Image (cartoon, rainbow, N blue to C red):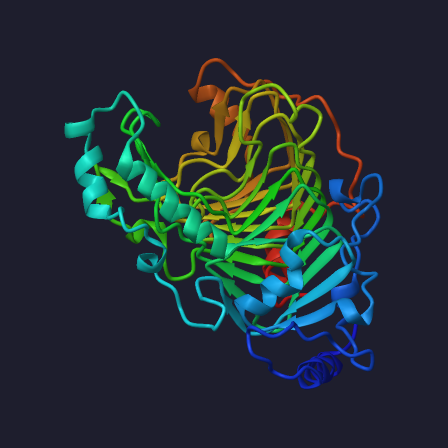
Length: 444
């Protein structure tokens, strides 16, 4: 690994070697004489989780000079990604802050710019107020259709499709704000060293049948894997930025939820490693498997989640259906009981293997709430430690705490044992120090 000084020089060469161009122009390629940060060509180590299985994960490591790009705005990023349709190995280096909600000239776009002429939030609220519409069916009719058209307008701008054999790597302090990296039906992708923030949906949908009181639902994640294979997400920081959900208004007595997942793995995605990331100040954090329907997901959704920090996130950490998911050496920092729901969601045919995780919690957060039964049967839990604030560290069996408070019990054997780990597992007592020192963007 180069020294910080050498890396700074390298990055300076990169940025100096690529001229600033109008957003409408072709994306500049790094010339052959310019070096690329070594970490941007790094491949996933052997045995580092499920993404190391079969062919492994190399992303764009084999990119030639013509397919290495430094991008500074949304138009350049979209051009460098080539719509996600070109499998030629490529490295996309993010410089500075890229805002997905801007037009091709770089002018900012607001929700009003995406809104269909027939849509307004006030009209939508008036039409689908449960006192008027009822609670038996989801919204239909012209206003719902106008909302859907508005949502499609925004989605066409902020969904950034990532192709096969791609590495997206953040240069120092790189951010993508308001965008959804959409990794769909492709193989071999790496996303590293990025801050991803606030993929806010301008047009959440109201569903009065979702739960006993109804819910608002949004469309965009910060990173979405759908039908994707061999993906490594590493050393990223994912959050709602300064637009946290707890500050959203209430409509129909329910939070106006403008964010969906932070990093979701759905629709038969497979062979994924999620390592050394920080997830913070977000509600629906990580969904693995999006439906209870037995079908394409069976035998897929194999994911490893290790050495991540989950700081004051609400739920789905992760929520799992079908997949064999290895959750080890993660640091759960949970001090806001007002926004907390649960962490390990044990869903239909799920097989979570949770080992050597550390939980720092508020005294008001009950152990029995950490696990939630979403229709599963068992979870393996080994070596969990916990503490309250700066109090003593002690062992805890979170599954036993759940079973003591709920019926029927969840079983204690998920039915498999992980073998894809790159080295000795970190002792649980060391997890907070290791994760705090190494996880998140800027820590490679």
